[in-house]
Length: 523
Ligand SMILES: CC(=O)N[C@H]1[C@@H](OP(=O)(O)O)O[C@H](CO)[C@@H](O)[C@@H]1O
Image (cartoon, rainbow, N blue to C red):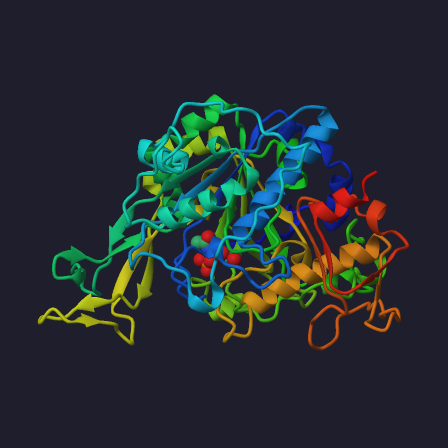
C-alpha cells in the first residue's frame, strides 16, 4: 500500500528557519565534506540535440550553458562557505556520463555550444590544491588532458559522450574550477533486445547498446573507485543531481544542513504539486521565501499542471520510502485526491538526492545487485537483413535501466525535503515544439527568478523612455517578466547579497548583473 509522504516532509515554515540557519550546511562545505555528483547522461533525444545536454544554452542574455551555470554555482557556494568559516574550501564535482549508443555528438547548427569567453576568476575563490591520486585511469587521463604543450596529453576515443563533455570543459578552462576537482566517469551499457528477447543489431557487426539508466551510477562508482577517491578527499556527504534542471542549487547548504541535522543517510528534494492550496485560508500559510518578495509569495507558486505530469512521486510503499516513476504509475492512481482536494501523491521527485558516503558504500557493496531493472520500451534503430539501416517509427525493442532512486528503500533514515518549484525546478526535457519543459520555459524560469530577486533587493526597472515599469505581483499571460534581469551565479547563489548593488536603484532592461559589473562598483 502506498502512502503520501507529505507528513514526513518538513513544512515550508521549518525550511524558512533552516534557510536562516544555512550555515550548518556551509559548515560541512567549509570542512570539504561535501561533493556534488552530476548525472550527466541523457542523449538529448527529446530535446533534439546530439551533444550532451549540459552543453545546451537556453538563450540567456549571457549565453551561458547549463554546465557553466552549474560550475559558477559551485564556485559561489565554495566562496560563501569559505567566507563564513574563514577558510578556502572545495566542493569536488563528479560527473557520470553515458557512452554514446548513437553517434559522435556534434553541435546542432541552430544552437551551437561554441565557447564564449570565460568569466574571470573570482579572487576570493581559490580551490585547494589537488588532494588525490587519479581515479579511473582512462577518465582521469581525459580530464587531465591539456593542449600538447603541457605535460599531460589528451587521449580519448570518439565513442563516448564523455569526450564532448571533457572537450567542452577544457575549452572553457573548466570554468575556472581546478580540473583536479572535476572527476568524470562513465557508466556501463547493456544490450537492447526485441520484445522476444533477441539482441538488436545496430550495424551488421554491432549489437545495439543502451546506457544502464541513472541507477547505473552505483556500478559506475564501484567500477571507477569513486567512493575511495571521495574518501581520500574527506568527502562525507554527496549531493546527486540531474543535469537538466536550470534552477538546480548545487551543494545546497540548506538541504545538506537539513539532512545532516536529521542524521539522514539518504534524502530527496521534492516539489509539491499543489502549494497554492496550502497557502489558502484553510491551510497553513506558505511563508515568504527569503529571496522572494512577500507580495509575490502566494501568487507565483506553481501548481502541478496535471496528475500525469512526467515526474516520479516520492511516497511510501508498505512503509518503505520509494519513488514511483511517472512511467510506472497508473493514471487512476496519479489522479487520486486527498481529503483536502489536493493530489494525494503530490511530492514530485526533482532528481536532487542526498547520500552519505557510508550509505553509498553499503549500496555499492551490498544492495546494488538487488536493484531491479526497469523496462523501457523504445524505438531502437537497427539494420535489416540486407544490411540497410532502419529507423523504426514504432517502438520495437526494450532497454533495461536501473533508477538512481531505487536505493531509497535501503536507507535507515530517509528524509524528504520540500522545495518551491519556482525556486528550484525547471527541467529542460523537450524541444520548443513541446509546450513545456523546453528551452523557452527554462530560460523564463531563470529570468523570472532573477527578476524576483532584484525586486526583493530593492531594484526598480525602467522602460526605454525612462518610466518605471510596474512591479507585477504575478506575471502576465506571456509568462515573461516585465524586465529582463540575469544575475550571475558568481554574484548570487540564491538571491543573497544583492541589496548592496540594487537597493533603491533604477535600471533599464536588460540588466546583466555579472562579476565584472560588481567589480566595477567596488572602490
Ligand atoms: C529515473 C529518474 O531519475 N527519473 C527522474 C527524471 O526523469 P527523466 O524523465 O528520466 O529525466 O527526472 C525527473 C525530474 O526532472 C524525475 O521526476 C524522474 O523521477
